Length: 163
Image (cartoon, rainbow, N blue to C red):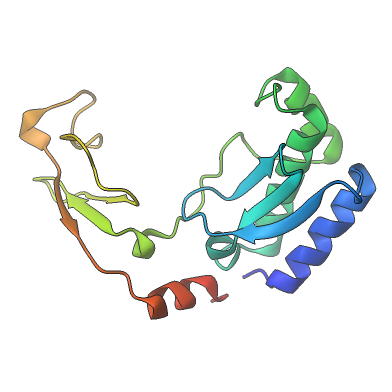
């Protein structure tokens, strides 16, 4: 799993190479599902400390390239053709979204459908939800029942450490 000090070095090198290092900065954030973020207002690129601890170096490098492409393309580009062209030129070979592991053990809400499929939420569900694995549309027969669980500080610390 990726060493966070090494990720910082890579990120700062990519920022210096492609952006203005006097303006843009890098840091880690506490996201549990999103791998990276480009904050255009703060001129900051961040990577989830929890997910960086789970991913291999190549995956983290691709996340950094993805976010650098966002910074270069601008806030209005989204994942459109301008962003895609820049991402390709940088050597990014991934998709628009990461399909990797998320920090499910940190989700305080755990749901289960009648067929046993598990679902995780980081915020309290505010309406009834049904299992998307069991039914394409909303189905009362596949309602998810939610339970709150406590996530300890020790669990959070463990999740932020490389495996």
